[in-house]
Image (cartoon, rainbow, N blue to C red; front, side, top):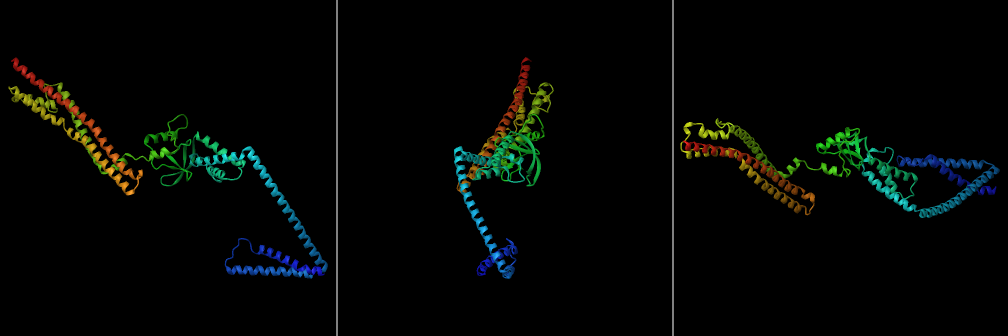
Length: 471
């Protein structure tokens, strides 16, 4: 009886601890925060009351039992504790043995890996995976094989490359699969449906035609690949009309060989090409000097066309008059020269010196019309390069001013001034060279007509002198 009573405090303490853990586990679930401090206080009081009730009940059960029953309860508790201690000791020994076994296996694995060169092999595999991840991220082929149930291909390979554990067979197979698919798709021309970002920012699903890893088109427009978003977008500015027609014809083709536009740099050249300024933008870069040069060129072109039409009509009319010299007409220069001394019999002088003067007067009267605007064209030819030189000087002044203000030689800061300088020079030479040929053409046509007038007038004068001498 004394032995039983001496073990009662230990048994009661064990029961109390078990009751506390049991009650706490059932009364307050984990991660269940109280609404307030008052609610927390009420929960603590509830748990304490429940623990006291359990403790009192177990004390009552133990006190109400007979001596034999109490002895049996104590022995049963001691037996359970012994079993638990034995099981714990066995698990501890098993854990120690497993730890030793794992260390031994790891040592054997390292030795075998070193013998087979697996460490170097896995290092190369990780390096290849890292390079392939970067290539796949920059490749527009990724848009054809999206993943809806996990990371995309380049993310998987990057995780493999950054891993510090021994690669699993499935990871090596994934590396091989992604590389094989990229190589295979690089040699294909295929059509598939993918989301495309429009110039207004809206994303629509479109039929994309991809030419290997080089470039892609949709609805006759060229697309650019956005690696950060892993999607395609329509270029804000498209290529010239002939290249657009080639892209549209390539999309419509279903078989055979058709012309296509391929960017071997995988979009770099295409992006640079569409960034080229248009003709209007280049002219605007010339600013005031450029506009003055263009105005001079347009004015010279207008007068050239007007005088060219006049000389062509005059030459045709003179050629027609040459076939009928006996009937001069006033609608051409030669006819007006003939009428100067043939049209009016009263004006025919017996003195051939006076006749010669009359003929010279008539020819000189026609020459200004035939050589009209040629002086202005020569002036425009000379003024074009000079105006271009002014624009060049202004552009260089702007360039040096940008360098002074920025304190550096950044080409982007100097681009405006240099562009203005170069475009002014180009515009000046651009109007001078064509106008030089235009002036030469007008001079040639006018000299031809003047030469015909001189020949015909001299021939008529010689014919009159021969008639006088024969008479």
